[in-house]
Picture 1 (cartoon, rainbow, N blue to C red):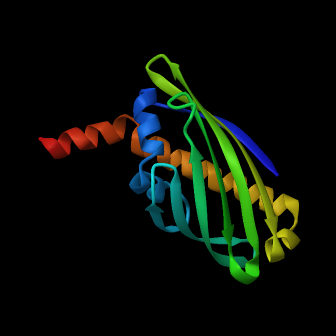
Picture 2: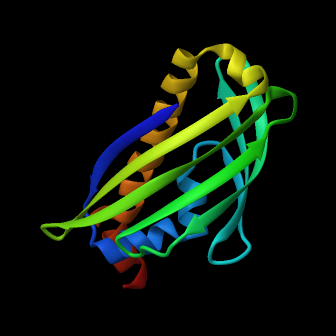
Length: 157
């Protein structure tokens, strides 16, 4: 399964890049994320609870970041196990472009699933993945955009 999309974020590229590397922001954006632990600048561990159709599973997994193209691009790869529900593994390539003081974030993600989840059918899985990605990036844009900057300025006042 492959997903790709783009979203414009009302913040400069360096702010967006820093936020994409901030475990607190990521944890708040990832649907169902209960815990996100940063082991190093390139290694993260996550615990996520997701419901896909009739299957609800708790996934534990690891994510590895490749930041060699930073701050214009980076990629990530990860895999997680959901016990009897199955497993998921995949990755994403992300590019960040400056566009009139904002950032255009483009991503291409690929995922492979197995176990009970794989039996649910591609249409349900693809629809759920697209919905989860949409929730992530909508929340991310809310946290990183101008409203977030206004809140941090008010907190400092």
